[in-house]
Amino acid sequence: VSIAEKVSNGSGTGSGWIYKSNSTSTYIVTNNHVVQDFALSTGGTLQVELNNGDQYPATIVGRDSNYDLAVIKISKGNLPELTLGDSTKLTVGEPVVAIGSPLGLSSTVTSGIISALNRPVTTGSTGQESYVNAIQTDAAINPGNSGGALLDGSGRIIGINSAIATLSSGTSGSIGLGFSIPISEAKRTIEELINTGKSTRPVLGIYFDTTYTGVGAKIGKLSAGEGAEKAGIPVGSIIKSIDGLRITDEVAAIVKIRSYAPGTTVSVAVELPNGGNKTYSVKLGSAPSN
Image 1 (cartoon, helix red, strand yellow):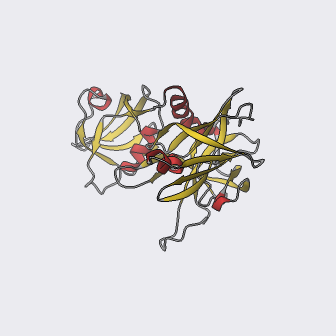
Image 2 (image 1 turned 30 degrees about the vertical axis):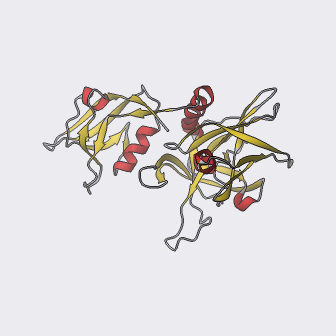
């Protein structure tokens, strides 16, 4: 579907896709940044346009800026739902298609391949970052594609198109570097938003030393009573891998942790302050997301 928001200081467009539909209403998934201005405004409109051109006003069910996900609802039922794929079984090089409304051109389909997996991507302004353990694709993704579906060769949704890389000149448009939120990770947040209007995120229980410039993520402080402290990881340790995935910096560590559900037990390999190496088993806590 296409999504259009209008608020007092401007307007914007994006994309979405049908997650669930019953006899009277339909839940649509998109990116938080597509609907955020409407959510924060005191007036304005949020409109959904279906592929056949029918338009319906939408309301926000819930949104999560940490994962850049939002669920909206329209009062129109019995619409076709997308079949969910399994983003944990993807391979680099397999074909994909992106569907959305780039530059307001609804029902646009572009094709490509999966270029990389587990790509750490952060978007948004300082203090309001979204962290994505992204699927990278060279399928053309442009402004307006945000929130749209990335489909596998069988037409199952495997990712939610969320961001693109741009050249340093600031020119905005596809250069073959698009990033999608894996559906198998997004599903938990989507279900929480539908069921409660709110969502949660996993917590390792550490604060990173942002002055560290080496390879890895250095622990500057521990949160009392959280998983890292309970596991015995000392302050000053440098995280080198999580569940076998190499960690190059703090963004990579945050993205990897955010890819899990709260309560998951993960393996954290660190370089100790004394120079030794040790692997810890850490049970992730839970905190409200927003």
